[in-house]
Length: 187
Image 1 (cartoon, rainbow, N blue to C red):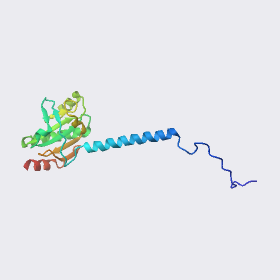
Image 2: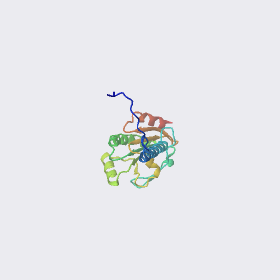
Image 3: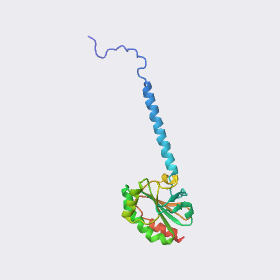
Image 4: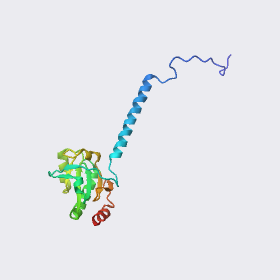
């Protein structure tokens, strides 16, 4: 009787056994290409997104009232640019806060610009009506330059008199906005 520990003959490997099949290499290649494309897109999006201390991307916007605003034409003024959307819950929280700041600072040389991000016109107008927003407002679907689409909803940028981003806000967290507005308007 042979014991179970007896040496077994090793059978010869069949051709291709233990190797990754061709379709496996194709799947790996497709996955690598996909991840490379996503990584490049994320890097480019990060590089084009305005951040504090950098010159704000220039844009031209036609407001819902038919006025044309070009960011670079506002040099010498403090500008607050708020991107919002009717479906954005944090935007609904920040709208009354921004309108109150607009009412307080509009006569102190501060320009507030609201930009609706990808809403249909009827939803944008309904949203604005619900908050009584009166600061200049345009939309990325109207006549906005392609530069606006680099910026997304629920983002607010405070831009100094020289066109540089002083502060970036995400959502309705404006804890230091009054202090910054006072500093920028007093200089």
